[in-house]
Length: 197
Image (cartoon, rainbow, N blue to C red):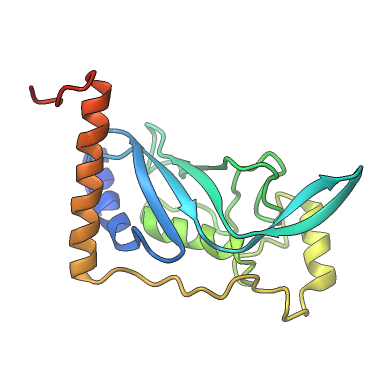
């Protein structure tokens, strides 16, 4: 396990490259100098359920894409990542508060990699049965809805996409693409000049 915060952030960044540009996920680092990313913006391409207000009535429906921000506070890895869904309507799931923040079933452990934490969060969005919190749910209405329907194989899991990872060649290509994007963002923030000029 890395000994300091920057080592941990760099290890997490390298690990995250193995799940970059997958059929189910792409991401950009939005805070921190690479490879010391402190925030990620995830585009998730998995079917999940949301609760919408339609004609004065709440209805559960499906969406195939959502955006999530993952923030690694200064106290990370001692404290867990902060995960917030940015879409409206919010996801409707026992592990997600109605205000769109994620609540994992398993207490955070500092030796858990960011990639594994995110993959567990993705499993909740698919309504895989294992990570669904039934003892201390973040959303009791979603838990009640799920329990009444949990034996319906047409509903759960709501997406069967495998959470595969990149091979070494794909990971190297992902790293090159992510670092190139970082240079473009740095140039834009510097007023059109490269950051090293």
